Image (cartoon, rainbow, N blue to C red; front, side, top):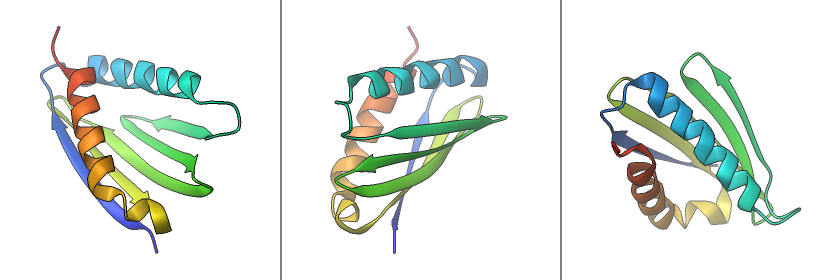
Length: 103
């Protein structure tokens, strides 16, 4: 069973700008992955981004909801990835804050 991980990242960008930055962040993440070592799929519906990623031979799924003042992330981590939930949560929080800080 997948371990659910939730992260909320506040921001002051509005939903349109936050969504644009998230799209750019996913594009950068995808371009940095070595071929065959992780596939990321994503699909926007309104302000919800559903995604899946392959890591260590396991599929993690989740979604994020973009609001005017926060992004709420729910990530389901199977098996071994679930044991890394604390590290993954910290990384999501730090990278998300950097991505969504007002510049």
